Image (cartoon, rainbow, N blue to C red; front, side, top):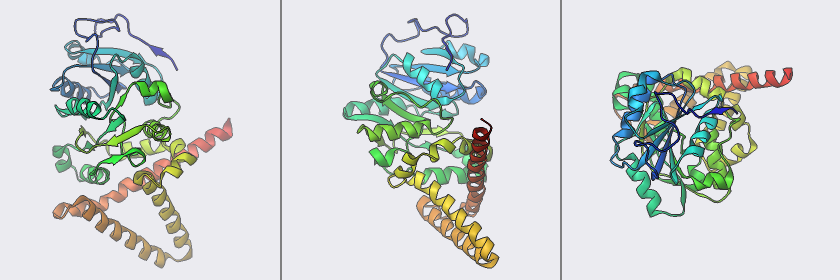
Length: 341
């Protein structure tokens, strides 16, 4: 991994304390970006600067410096770092290593934080000294959900798993890297994010936390808004998840984590359908219709959607197919790479 700390450029701060950087912030917000989402990144930073809790710093880790936001980056308590590795885990690790606070929070460049986000995070850690990892849901903005049936369906299915409060093993997969905070000391205890993983490094880290007896909590009250990226993102992200889901440890954790279990169950059902298709196309179609109808009813009840928008739910098939084809694309790509090397 190669990393470069920007010392001088006029459009960014260096790592030395400045008039705009707190000497000892209470929270360091790690914001990693490739630098290609300037509009969303700007909204994210503004949402952080509008927090009611102000004793924090922003550590912006980027691949390409967002020059369009130079002026904005000079108005807040921000330090910028350049990370040339290709993984999100490496970028976040760099941010953690340069964070000055004892609490570190992660947020994505396509997410926005409510004004009380950091206040709730700090208060929760203060109230529970045994807590080392705290996360919450990433919700679809209402205006985007209303405009796009696909976005509505994607948000509904993702958020249907995130209604209650979960702890430790059952919180491992529900806490996502776009909305999570830690006591920084835990990185010294069990190591940093796995920089070899292109996706799923947050879940792998949470699994290690649980395995080592550290307390995790998923709290539905600590939420952020997350701009969904659609089918293309679902495909490519799933293709990057191959090493994580092929891990025996992940498979074992499926008994505690419904999100992991649903992945393996979906693959099993697809295998059964393929075998059935070879035996009898008629039975295949009956089984397929039964599965789709059962899933439709289950989701309607779980998400408490009893209005006309329920007609959009069959669109979830497109996301299921995108994730499945993405995973197997990544799997065959990995096999081909290993074969040639």
